[in-house]
Length: 346
Image (cartoon, rainbow, N blue to C red; front, top):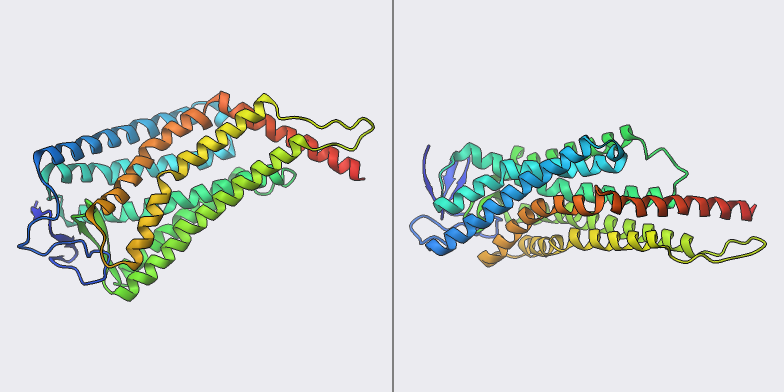
């Protein structure tokens, strides 16, 4: 297996030593120049240790969550299907992307071959695109479940499975389209520490970057913000509304509803705390010719941190009975209140 210095850019069918100005691979240093990385033993040891911890955490955590969902009958519901989709994406990230990055940090060079570079680059690009879309669809589903509980068309397992499958197929085709058309290729980026999509022309780079920003970044953020906000607003309104009966009494927030609000805030903060910096980096990377190396590394490591941290969120707020009961009770209470309102209007 050939050994390629870390300051080069590996891409099929040849090794590109210097990327064109304005391309996404502009962080690649040409042959003969010093590596754009600090390869001191301390830095190498630190990066390798962090990657080993993140890889083990992502593999173990997602495996535990997947086993818990599949072996717990009360978790066999539609929302768990969305969770299992994210678990599968994080497991693939931990299997196909993170170990190779860990090896690169330890060896200070890419010596895994061109084929594995294509596998890692495609896997990272595909998985980092499909996870935000699944999160956005999950938020839209929860919003419809709370605001339109009487409509059961979207609540079927088959409908949800078809929707998720279409998302995966669409994202995979989008990831392969630039490669098939020859507009881009996957190669090793020394500054990013992974194999990344390198676009051949600056105009194509901007076009592909804008499309990915809109579809894989802004659209999921809008769906999450609107979905969770409308869902929470509906639950709060229905829990405090005055029912027009003979003895009108306004209900106050219960302990379960307070628990639901806490879970909502915890999920929202945990899901976007690593995502917002990634979106910012994507914006600058699309329209800027170059960025400092630490920014590219931050972009890469934040995705790995999300893959390792999401299982903890699932176990603490989604899969646990203490977190699910408040949500179920509030949702059921909202349905009863809506029925009372409809009866009062009649």
